[in-house]
Length: 383
Image 1 (tube, rainbow, N blue to C red):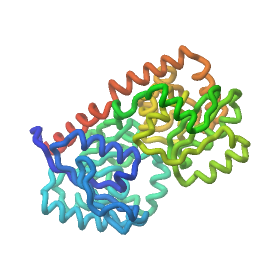
Image 2 (cartoon, helix red, strand yellow):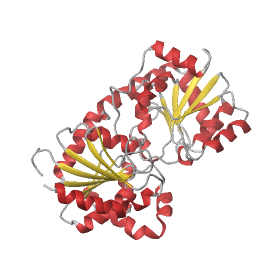
Image 3 (cartoon, one colour):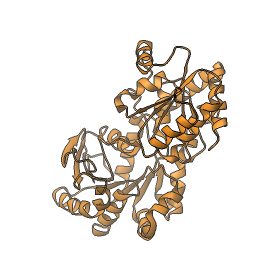
Image 4 (tube, one colour):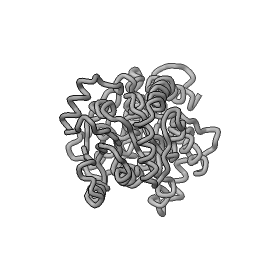
């Protein structure tokens, strides 16, 4: 595979577009920048309205199951049957599992049947590794085999690279290629669009806007962000974009703290419109308890919004304190509030964070750069 000729790649992923997460976005952004390659993807159907087969950009998608959450659990079994059929038809050059989850188990089963096929594992996990191992339960032995049997492992952060090594993967076969950001899609919008959005949401002229874009789950620390509102002594609105299992709990917390007029839950916002909300915000905050990487920070940076994050997981790869963002302490709402106030009051610091963040995103994290790095791995994996 040393030459630069277009290849056939079979991808295994627990979920895929139009279901949106960091991993799904990464696969889409990378594959569409390799238009001459053939990408086939097997995934769980999960939602009834999704088609069993369709093509999105440069990926032929094959969905397994009836359209419910249980489809994830049968993916390693019914997905293998589909993978064998596609392999006979296409004779793939490379197998690619997205995350060491259901797609990882499917990759492991396929590798055991086709030992000569090079298998690439990508780690995009955002949950704490201890939580992941607890959830794996009695399947730990097979779970570790995913790391040991993969021919090559690409991780999106140094944190996940260390985890892969701890799980038994050889350091020599691990490479860090981070997630990226679409520089053209995520850029600061014009002031008229910002003003119109401000009026639409109902934000007063003197109110500062604190934004987070996050799944509403414990690991993202949204409860700590809400609690930080108690310590802010100026007019503000905290905009929370995202859906998840914690929504009701977070809404109840907001009422308990009497912050109903300061917190706005916006639920789902179409991915294509997110740049407007990043541009609207005075500061972006995600006080994560764990984080594989954190694409949303890069999206905020390219929209010229200063960021605040914790030293959790992969965030430390791009957030340099007082240069590209500010660190806040984990589980410390008062410290979050202090960091928000510092960014809003210190104009010189704010401008430096915006300038340095935008520069870093463009120079290191453009999807065009990332896609070429992934292409090198695809070509190198079985030279």
